[in-house]
Image (cartoon, rainbow, N blue to C red; front, side):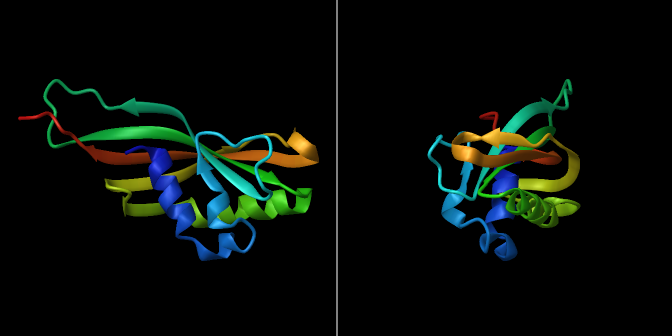
Length: 137
């Protein structure tokens, strides 16, 4: 599991967002150039595990996750990212198999021109969680 998995669960479970971005248009990894508008892309930017000499049953992990919108208008771009923040920011709990997760905003990127005259912008999040460790012991 990753911070991207946690963010995906939060976005897929937030009904107000689905009025502007259908569930089928929320993807992880990569959006093709011809992806339908409006779409969201979830990507892990970085991941850091807390290092310990002796691990317990979980390891604390801090991921930076970027949610990029590709929208049909500038207004939709802003509204969608505001809904993304509403869905994900300041959330705590167990999500996507992770324990004791917390999600904080970590900055919004610049406005970009996307393919086919679309509008793009990214919102970053810091996602901290305890990941169960499987060591075969």
